[in-house]
Image (cartoon, rainbow, N blue to C red):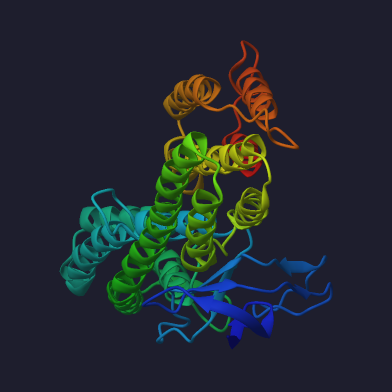
Length: 401
């Protein structure tokens, strides 16, 4: 179906499939936003931005200027795993689970601003020691707000930074201490911090819903692949026992079912090439005049399914834990050690379980070589681990699968 979609790069009409029960789309056609395009942020694209076939487009979950969010879509060119990582990052960033995030930080800041405001409201009755403590804490809060994204936090940071001086600037350029004006700034900052907290509470259900939809969509894809595997394993056994016209006719009917019922869901990256390969090999197996040719085509499909299962494990067990910490800028040496262990464990299982010698372009040895090179580069005796570089290397390995 055609859908008019608003993105940060402009409006585009795309042929898409809507993921059941949501406003998340999978692109069924390619579109290019040309270099020179003005983005909604006022920047200019220095190079073309490609929305490839199989990209996932999900509604943004954050509002602008404290208002309800407009229907603006974020593009995930690498598909459904990238989209899931994006929502999981938001869940952690906002603090919607057990881990500390923006919500908990803002709650603490709001409480501290309230305490400082109470001191400032005492006016001349406040002791110099109390004012010093308030001034010091306001300076720390300004630092903790950091470089905020979003107007409410930016305004709060600006007002707290100004309040930390306990002074106002006069038209003449001179400055003087002014506790009432400082109290007004702190009150205004607290108001914006609390509004941002309310905003996150409104955002939270959408973010968690998108996470659930994407996780269920991935689960559905593997349900379909699992169903296809069961059909092929059963039919493979029958073809091994007998290659009679009747058995081949039953096999063709089952293959047609798989093509019509199961494969249409494999339209999101990174499943497009797998779907194409499965269609070709199913057609070859159905038209095969020899048993060996049919069995070889079926075996390639079964291996392709196993490779996508390996990719899923690689994404969830190797990339995701590191990527979430790297995105939150909290990567530690322990994360690198854990990644090394998970990467080595994956390589051992992959070497033992995958046999793609029947493929036109085998991937097994390339994947294992890439893993070895990554381990040597990032965890060698003279290595200086770089979380961003390692994450990109792992994503490149995943794209091989």
